[in-house]
Amino acid sequence: MTRGDGPGPVPDVASGRGTTGGREVAVVEDPSAVLLVRVWLEGEDRTFRARLSGISGSGAPGESTVAVAASPRDVVAAVERWLTEFVRDAEHRGT
Image (cartoon, rainbow, N blue to C red; front, side, top):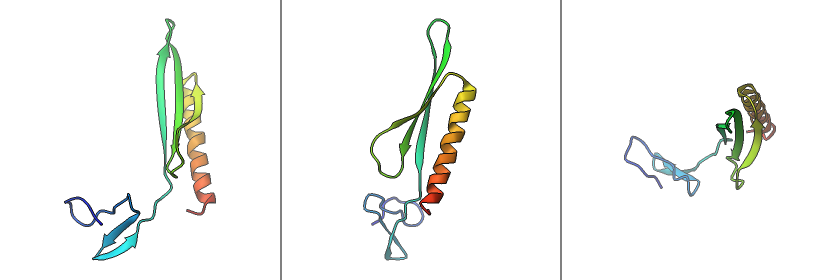
């Protein structure tokens, strides 16, 4: 089960299976997540605002608000916290 015309087989991620050298192998999913940072300037005084939303790569549905911020420094701190938690949680799962 491969797709694509490039060099080598491409795993069929929909089925979780792939082929290599003519034999079928399981495709292992590495821990992953997405962090979306949205920033804007609000109102006449152009006040900085930000919302950080996270989407787990674990197949859990939906998006959750990770943080809201009122300054670029707050955004950076929230990203650092999110990354630290992601790595800690991945290590805790043993993956």
